[in-house]
Each structure stands twice: as structure tokens, then as C-alpha cells.
Image 1 (cartoon, rainbow, N blue to C red):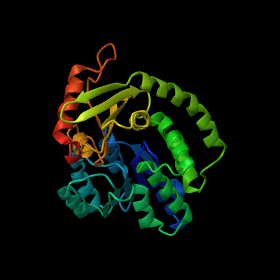
Image 2: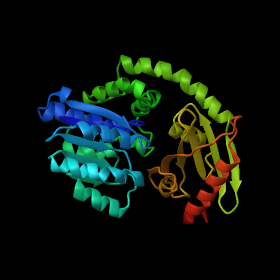
Image 3: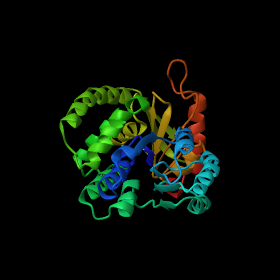
Image 4: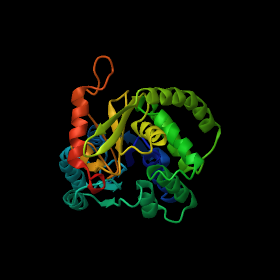
Length: 321
């Protein structure tokens, strides 16, 4: 049995899973029905992984991709050790910021642990499983385009919108459909087009909402930040803010459905900022959760804004000085 747990919110996560599925289905003679796909993010990764590890048989394989790491994940280490004893192999491919000591421990426990911040997860997995396969190379290129915000491929942006639209466990079948299409080398078809028609109106409404509810704050000894929210992924909200306010030093997008936050800045260590709230990510982009963001009138609470400002000053880097 092959089990894949990947980041549910972006193309890099699903692209990673697609390359895994392509490899084991087409190149390693493993029946595709034996490949189980799970979708997670940092807030439910522990729960999903516990469930998988309790069921995975001896000699099975678990492949984790594009999840990142926060300190709570340490509670999984004993379960990893237990699986290792029953000859279950665990592979972890990632590119998020992780402490050297954590990397060392994971390399000792797992069959394979590769973390490279210069490549997205799909590129790492492509290089490991299918370095010369043209479809895997294209999936990895699309994933890098989104994760590193290169914006070279229109189809990559479209697929990312479809993935963001299909967030949540109730839409896992649609996410797996994206994975299957990518694994087969299908980057355009009628189903994608149908999805994009549904998404267009939704994104337009939520973009307008996000722009209407922007709050810009000037922080002494730092500069301006912008924060907004909508029933839209935090990363998409950040992109909207960046397009409209390119001079801002820090952007915060809040997914109102889940109270999840994406922070983006070249002037703050976003990874450490997020880690302070049991989240994680990259130096210039990361995600986390905070309770009680809003008042009863859906205004930003004073406590939330104070917390954000204090941590911006705590984690600002030299560029901001």
C-alpha cells in the first residue's frame, strides 16, 4: 500500500501527489487502487497522520509532501519510530523552513527526508522519482510557478484557482480528480473549464469584498502593513493586496471561513513569525491561526492588531530597519 499525505491548498501539494501517483501507477507497476490520497494542512496534519499510521500495514509506504513543520509535529515521532520497526517506510519531501535539529532527527527516523528551500516540493519529488519524465517536469514547473510567484504559466494559475476553490474534506474527490488529471498529463480539458466558470463569479465577489475591507496601518519603526479578509484563501487575498498596494511592507490575508492567516513580507521573518503561533512556512511567506481576530461586528479586534504589531517588531529583519 502506498499512502500520500500532501498539502491541500496549493498546486505544489497536489502536483507533488500527482508525480507520486504517476510514478507508482505507470513506472513501478503498482496498481493505482493501492495508492491512497489524503489532503492536509498544518492544523490537521497530526490528526490525519495519526489515522494513517494506525492503519498502514507492514511493508507499506507513507509519502508526505509540502506540509512544513511546527513544534507540535514532534508528537508524531514515536509513531514514526513504531512504523519503522514494522518495516513501514516513510518518505518526507519538503521545502519549508525547519530547524537543523529537527531535520537531523527526521533523517534518523525516516527512510528519506529531503528539505530544500531552493526547490518546491514537486521539484524535489520529480527529481527523486521521475527526473527525466516530461509530464513530471511540467507538473514541477507549474508548481514552482505558483509557489515562487513567477506567474509565467496561465494554466498553472488556473489550476491553482481550482484547487483553492475545492478546499475542505467534502471536496476531496475534486482534489483527487485534479491529481489524476495532472498525473495523466492533462493540463486543459472541459472539467477544468467548468470549474473555472464557477470560480470566476466567486473570485470576483470575494476580491471586491477583500478590497472593501482593507485596513492599512502605519507602524512606527517599520512602515505600512495592509490586512484584509474574505471567504477566500489567504494567499489569494495577499496577491490582491500586493497588486493594489505594491508599496506596502507587509501583507496579511485572512480566510474568513477558517480564520487562517497568510502573511507575506520581505521585511519580516514570516516563518518565525508563524512559528510563534504554531504555524510555519518560508522566510517571506507563511501561515498560521489566531483566535478572536474579529469583534462581533466583524471589525478587527484591538487585541489581534496589537498582537500582530508586536510580532512584526519582534521578527522584523534588517531590511525593515
